[in-house]
Image 1 (cartoon, protein in one colour):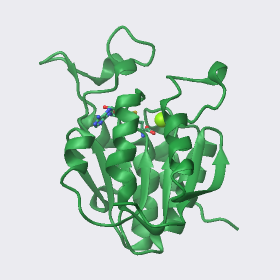
Image 2 (spheres, protein in one colour):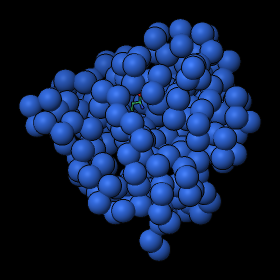
Image 3 (tube, rainbow, N blue to C red):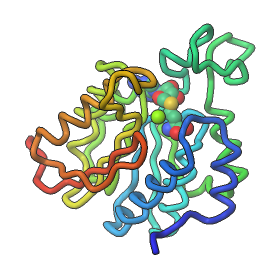
Image 4 (cartoon, rainbow, N blue to C red):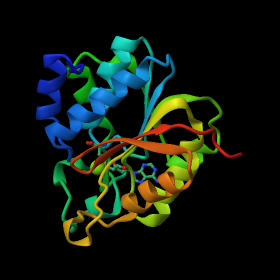
Length: 217
Ligand code: SAH
Ligand code: MG
């Protein structure tokens, strides 16, 4: 039987704001639980309100590692006021900009998972530029432009440890199915074409790849 998150975590996942369906969440959890056996941290790009972070946190707790999650908390292009994926509740009324950090913190607190997560608040490429240690899992679910998704791949994929996992969300091979563009699909193709990663599984738009060759430096 494949490992499953704690029922409390799953309930919090269902209740949290966000865009990940349950079957993809379960596949993410399974990948995180497997990667956690490497004894290295799990890292997510794109925290939003913490829906997917809950699953990484649960897996991190079981494995005795930390989950790290990166976001500037000001939202992606398509989440800004006037766009399809905007949620008015994510706007800080005082400054009139999106701020998903308070909601994220409530999500984790309610699930009792705060202590297993380190939130990195800032732009993904800026944080990646300072990063220099191996990761068991990198989950790319940040900005959906080629600029952002490409930078997430270039900045974080090199840190996936041997046998570690690279997980990519919102991979839509067919243009008619796409949700906010095909940049994540192009990142997925790049990872395979690099010869460094081998596909492990596909669940909905979630792809799990394993590092089977060393990073080119
Ligand atoms: N993983 C979340 C959804 C993430 S939505 C879930 O499953 O619920 C994408 C998030 O990426 C947004 O919160 C946005 O603020 C963040 N983001 C987009 N581009 C970014 C960048 N360059 N650096 C940091 N965060 C970014
Ligand atoms: Mg996503």
